[in-house]
Length: 134
Image (cartoon, rainbow, N blue to C red; front, side):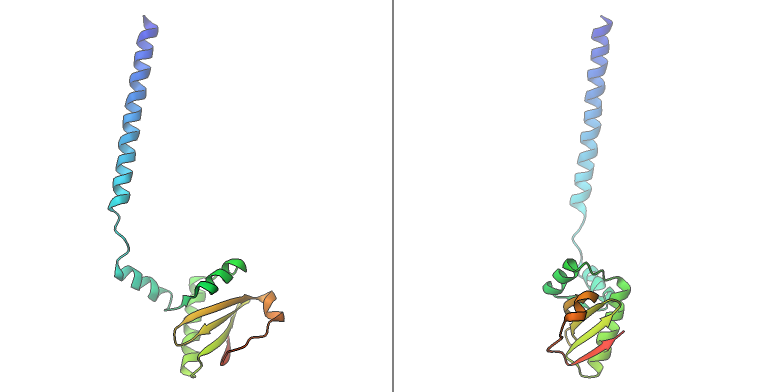
């Protein structure tokens, strides 16, 4: 008889625990569904935080392939450098920073490609109007 009571208690405990887990999962799902998508203001703030610098698809691929890390501070420095070359009337610039080189379209503030230190040694840079070392 006590074995049946213990089984009943165990089954009841399992059912209550399953119900608690189910409630917790429902609450998490509801919380996820209530999160709004990024607003226009949030997207704009993110763009401004990057100092208006964008990376082309090609440049993004190169940063990944070449294991080049670009920090927030680097983005700020690139933005400032981009502004300097724009003031000089340079359209496509080579910006050398840290151990990397960035080919940047200054009017669009877009990084076209990225080269690491090792590749800089044997590379010839063409189709640029100027260079800036920071």
